[in-house]
Image (cartoon, rainbow, N blue to C red):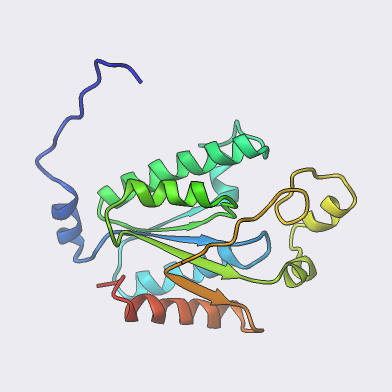
Length: 198
């Protein structure tokens, strides 16, 4: 980073932006294996939040890789850089007073911790979408597990690359056969009960 860059303070800050939206900004970070339901649940949750009058933005793993992270592959170092960029973008959206939903495998604890460290206490909500790999493979909406099992995809999380399970997520969505709609409703309720939507 250049030494001659100075942070410029603006008159309208995060608290004023949040106050104008009548909400507490935060990052709701959904993490889990490919096929766990993260994107579907995040999409349904955003609809519920919007219906409740909340101002939101959803950052989805695949969508982001079409633009901001389009130059990255799937090596461990590229995954780290992918999440670093997303974390910085999420921080900007929080500064804008928004409730940011993210749906990323984000397999490494340190990377999720990096995003948490960028934000104030209570602004990072880790949601572990805990779906067994057997169920994820059964769904396999993009055929990725099959390709990984055949050796066509290397470094695929859960098969060729590790997924580090969250140790103390704010919310643990444990899959037990419920539909995505039921999971989103449960998540909305839990977020409300824990005061993250005040």
